[in-house]
Length: 192
Ligand SMILES: C[S@@+](CC[C@H](N)C(=O)[O-])C[C@H]1O[C@@H](n2cnc3c(N)ncnc32)[C@H](O)[C@@H]1O
Image (tube, rainbow, N blue to C red; front, side, top):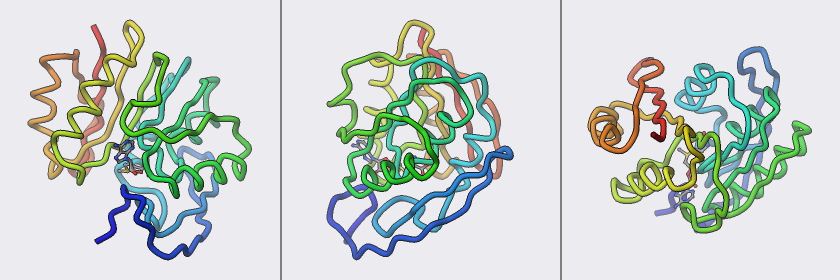
């Protein structure tokens, strides 16, 4: 079986979707084999509608077709890097950056292996189906790639283990729940 996070391609069927986030109009090319191929995921929307004052160096971890990094670049003066393990996601994110006329830096990375800098923000709708070990590597290793007082901002559903993730993160970060909406928790984990 092919998952959106593998490079085991299913047939391409690109289509363009129009998305409005906080009055910003964006267009995205989406495709089979990439997360949320029908358009903006509700968790991603909830994340983007509830974070603010983003600036500085930003990493969109697991960018998929690119909604997080592209929206952040459109609405702030941040320097945005976007990474994913999935080749098709990288290719779509590059097309979508052009389509929405934003200058972002998009490259392939398995977890943080190709990252050699530190960020003010790491923002993610993390992959859940990869299992707890990889999810925790993404969330806990983020600390090494955050500047002093840098923040990890992410969305997680209560079915994805939000409560236990929160409890575990509190051992390493100063954690705030920014909001909860229909089972989705928007979490800010600050490095201290
Ligand atoms: C839940 S999706 C979010 C996609 C996009 N940010 C969005 O909101 O629509 C998680 C993304 O993480 C990527 N991913 C999974 N495992 C990864 C890994 N080991 N390293 C980097 N990215 C990974 C997947 O390919 C997928 O695009």
